[in-house]
Picture 1 (cartoon, rainbow, N blue to C red):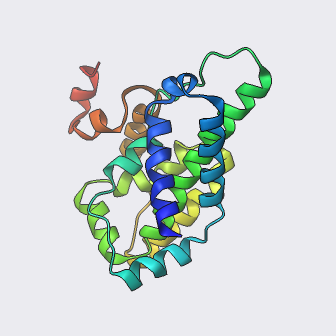
Picture 2: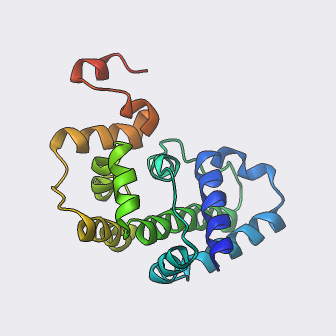
Length: 189
């Protein structure tokens, strides 16, 4: 079960980070990838969490997962068929859902919430509702509820929401996380 989840997370990150390369893969490979992602989407986050607790597994970083949810350059490959466009769109949506399931299962543990805090990601996790398509709203709020079980959280500040929007729409999360003042934003490229 968890191997499928971890493989799904890795594949989802690859798809969201390199969506422009999808058209280079054979459609049969992409169909297999989509099938795996759909199977991960069916997993219960609580089952994943219990498995990790039983096996004494924990994650050391969440930067990559959150980073790919803020990926600004998700591109559906240039394709002729509307069926193919629908397929690629579903593949991207399944990838987002897999990462949200992973966050939901992981952030129900204090050790993981502490890691997210230490990496400076908590504001970006709580700002996800302003950056993720509305069709994922229920899953995004489930992630935030998991964090709230482990610590008191505040709504993101206007500055955090603005940085999250800039991360999603233009610069990506890594660049935005390095910005520490408003004046630095003016010089980002």
